[in-house]
Length: 181
Length: 168
Image (cartoon, rainbow over the protein chains, first blue to last red):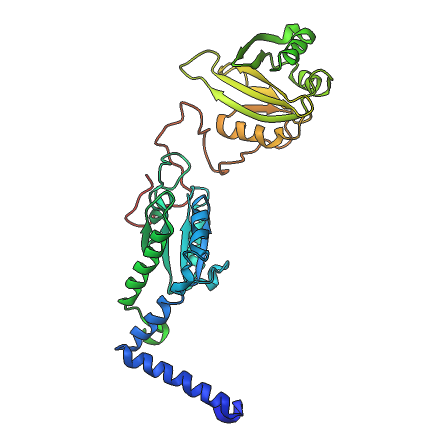
């Protein structure tokens, strides 16, 4: 059964053509399929906000209308790691929470990225004691660190843009199953 | 601010009071633990004191500062009379005597978690508490981290660090 007969009317056929044209244009503008995929990945972050502390307020400010990270395509926080590709670790991580954070990270499907939000997540901040993990990079890999206690929303937007730049040049297998021998 | 309440307590239980003092209008009584529950019930129910609320319950470790080493501090507040009172129980750090005070959970239910916290962080036992488990630290944690002799650099991570990293 052809697409035309499935969709039936003329108007929808035009929509399909428009979509095809869009992707052709996308591929023409970029050099490879990988570039096109990277383009769509970096403009559609689905974040998992792992919010544990006061940095969460600043995270919300960044999400609000004044700073509005949805301008960068990072619009929808997902509260299931299965649906997310950007893990935002916002706030102090204690040793008691460390196994939970690692599980959340492992539950996320590839490709995935991690932003460490604020000094507590990045280094333990001023908590150097029995309870606090001294930087989440001791338990999960981190792509971008945001300094500040808490960081300004501008710093968060800067981090999102840095991550976008990083993804721009990424070369990871598009379909790992197909490409492996 | 609550001189009357303190006086009432001293008048009723003269033998249980070790000492009293007042800093900046904060009346404090240092008491013996033996009849603690009875005294707390009196402070709650007596019309002159009517401390309906246990604001806070904490432990203190005075290692190297004074003897006896441990102290449990009770902060009471009266909603109807708008006055406050502090009670302190001193505890010897002696291996032969258990580090223990009677639980006041039956007087104020608020003591439930606070006593668990004092047990968790200081290792002070509360006899009669129905469920004296750790509340902030994890079960696998060894020792009591707010004791002054807890090793400052002692870390007890639940999961090992990533390759090439270490828990500081």
